[in-house]
Length: 77
Image 1 (cartoon, one colour):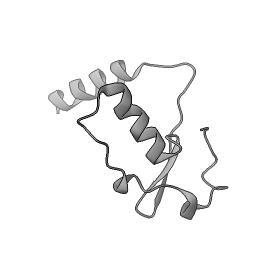
Image 2 (tube, rainbow, N blue to C red):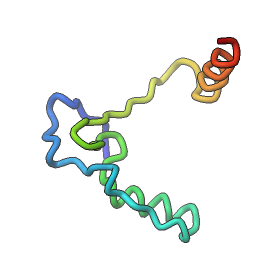
Image 3 (tube, rainbow, N blue to C red):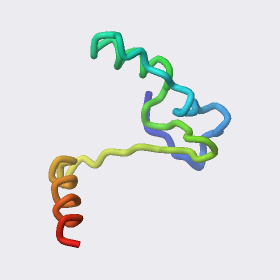
Image 4 (tube, rainbow, N blue to C red):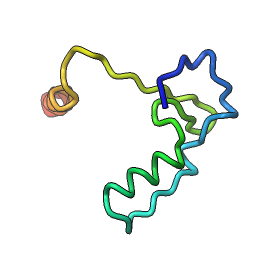
């Protein structure tokens, strides 16, 4: 599993996340493994015809901080 350049990837080789069904009766650790086995690469997959590539910055705001700011902004508008 690794991050890929979406311009270099064949989208037909990617798993469509809409087809991934995780067994929610499994314990959390096994559920995660089930998802990873089915999605194959959690950093690069498809959603329909769209290629999705996920990247994480080494530095910057945490997801928690970004979400808080986002919802604060929604309250103000």
